[in-house]
Length: 364
Image (cartoon, rainbow, N blue to C red; front, side, top):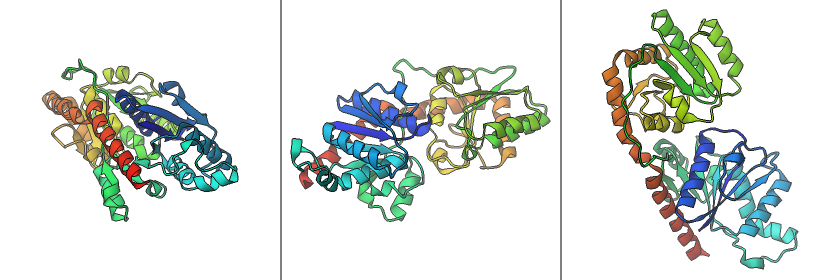
């Protein structure tokens, strides 16, 4: 199969990591993968497959739509995968109007055996459904999103739940957490309101009031950077919390912390949770749908009430004080991570892609 994998975001985050993971899993199964991204995308240095980069001023950008049309005609893929609302909208627009575009450019429809009807599979990363419902098929990264799409009328036989994946090294072994005199508590997220970094800072302020000794690292950047920095100074936590910005080496980050917090107000999946499982770091998550599909309270992590910084503070304190609990949680999480192994998920994805191509070939 020849597959075009598309996203027009410019940042680096969970969606972008999944985009890269799809590239790798398709490539590893001896299929041909081509990326289509924004010219200003931070992903470009990380893409190891052939790619096209286009300017993209808006989803209505006619020049870019024509460029996409040209790329699709040149590559003639078997299917297209889209990540993000702009990619969903623009690629479905191009495929649905290819006959019109051909006529406008005075090119015969049958030239170069062009496939007019190419199936588009939208990857549902969040609860913004307006554009993804244009796709022929949807892969939702959580069961909750799948159920919500079905409740809104999307055909049940065209939407499938396949979770995000993580690459597990063949030589990976479980390493139990080691107690430290001064534990380091971490968060890895875009600094946006929905990620709840302010809740994290308030929870740490509560810990300090209880005379709990700790250090903390905030990895990430974003529009809330200055607000978070001001909050740290408001609670006199500048000696405890270090803001380290975007990180290139996640392994070093996880090796430097003892507890990971995911205090999101909204989180469709939570890829960082799998990364904490992989590195045997105990994790605390808010009780929102995405993380709740991965973490079982008291089994492979701890769950706190969303928005409740005191509840988060209590959970952090519990993990600091109960080292045996931390070991139990991380061992269970280490076993759980196998469910999300890239080898296993890749096999499921490729079988799904093959079935989509077969159905499309029969229908043409």
